[in-house]
Image (cartoon, rainbow, N blue to C red):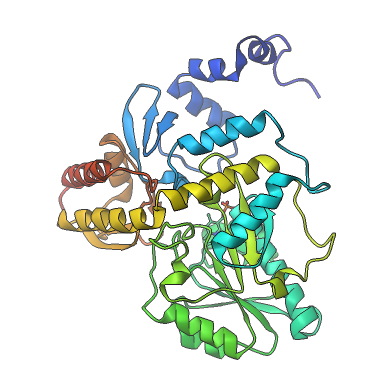
Length: 427
Ligand SMILES: *Cc1c(COP(=O)(O)O)cnc(C)c1O
């Protein structure tokens, strides 16, 4: 193959000045062009090129300031460049970053213990992305079904919910109900059955002797910030208990204080057998995820059953432990609860004729707009007024800013959203 770039350009420039200097020389327009030219078009980014971040604030190359209400799809709980996390990275990269799990490392050891304790559970299988954590839960549940519950080989089924979002692997999109996620990507992995979200009776009816697990998000986040009725989580727990079915909560987005508790299942004490966690576990700097759960289940994995080259690496472990400590020391749960109420109430009090509903638990907030609103126009108005947010399903704009966001920044978000709504074409 011919080299894509003549040998005297990009690589020499990097060797001479470092990547940092090169990226700082790129204009916003050049960055957009280059991305569209060389990158797969699997995302449609807002037309803004972020060059710097600090806490809940981000800047583009022209120096315009934005309040980041996407927060990397709520992975950015700690905000851009959290001081403790950045210090931990700097300290660790001087010593050891990656070994693979072919060896033991003290960093991974402490991470496994720390995460198990934080989650109040027994064992941890470390991965990188949320989708991998969910895949790991699926494999654990199936092997548990065959080797512990006694389901006949290849007959195990997992019950999921309509409107779910669990990631983008082929197995996972196979049980999505979103046509856009799965069209032209089949054939899919069998063994999944989907029922309406928030309907405990539907689970009761769907369970068979071959059911290994029920997998769901305690609040559907990408699905449009859909919060089930009170009592649902607890009822799900008791159905799973009564039918020897594993309960798997996907807390990749709701977990780690986003909803005002460490985990959303804690609102109803609906403790899972397995749980997928990720996003904020990486402290806003790198992917760290895990499947965590009860010893009896996680123990079914034997050497060779599952793995990941980067899953459970020393650098990620140090980042995650620091991220967990920060959540505790800075009372992220209390902050998310208090600031979430403030932001949700503020959005509601705007009393805009364009807003249909504001749904929230903690700092997981969805603002659903009326049918008549052109959501493309609104997202560009928001951008113009310095608010970064994107639409989830059901015409719902997400507000998942970093949990470290300050009170006056919350008020500023409300003010800017108000101005954006006011500048929309009237109904
Ligand atoms: C984001 C998300 C995932 C997938 O995480 P990735 O890191 O993007 O693979 C899985 N489940 C839920 C609930 C999520 O919000």
